[in-house]
Picture 1: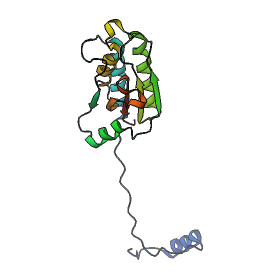
Picture 2: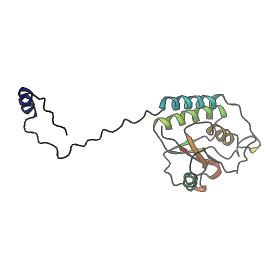
Picture 3: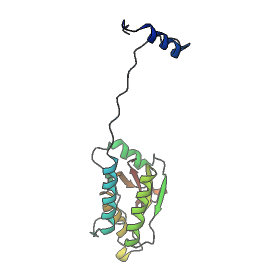
Picture 4: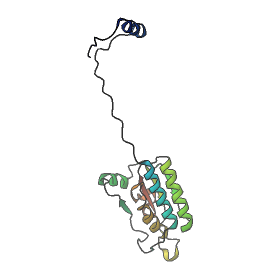
Length: 180
C-alpha cells in the first residue's frame, strides 16, 4: 500500500481518533468479485407462457404412437447420460399428475397448470400418468400422443421417457424439467 505524504497533522489525528484500537491487516490484497450477468428469466417465463397457451389451443394429429410404444425425448444439448439416469428412475419424483379419465380439454388445462406449478416450485423431476389408451375409442392412446406432442414444445422440458414398469410403464412418463 502506498503512503501518502500530503496528510496534515489534523487529518492524521482525526483518522487515529476514528480508527481507535483497530489493528492493521497482514495482507492488503483484496479482490473485488465481478458482478454476475443477469439471466434472462423474463423471456423464459414469456416463452413458457406462450407454450402453455399453445397447449390450450393446439390441434391434434392422432396417429403418432400406439399404446405400448415407449416415449423418449431429449432436448438438443442435453447429455445422453442424463436421459439414461431418467430412464433408470435415478431421479427422485417430486410431483405426479394423473390424467386417467380426463377429456382432452381437461388435460389441456390440468397439464398447463401442473407445469406452471412445477416451474414456480423449481421441481426437477415429475411423473405424468397418461394411460395406455385402452379406454379410448379404437383403443388408441389419444392423451399419450397429445402429451408427447405438447411437452416437446415447452421450454422448461429437458427430457422425458416412459416410466419403469413398476411406475406405470408405457402408460406413464418421467419428465425432467429445467429449474427456473
